[in-house]
View 1 (cartoon, helix red, strand yellow):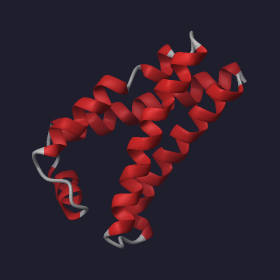
View 2 (cartoon, rainbow, N blue to C red):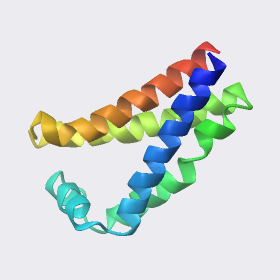
View 3 (cartoon, rainbow, N blue to C red):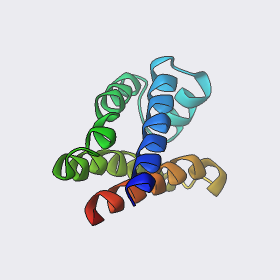
View 4 (cartoon, rainbow, N blue to C red):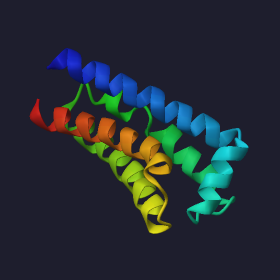
Length: 116
């Protein structure tokens, strides 16, 4: 179980870093998508900052169960919020899929943190 938790937590960190990096670089397709779901251009750097701050939490949580549970909750809420934003504007599954997949990885990380 410990190895699986390390793998999933590491995967989550890589995805969160990639997401934050794309937001910080203001990748046009990402900014367009975020504007489409109602996130203003001024909010994009703030969301990137939140991702950067929270990225190490799940890995730090490998050493401490309480920190791990709390740290894994942030990405779950963040990416479930992204799924909800896509659903609110009635996006197709193809547009929702990236946020949904990351949400599932975040939920898996949280579940592993809780069960350890």
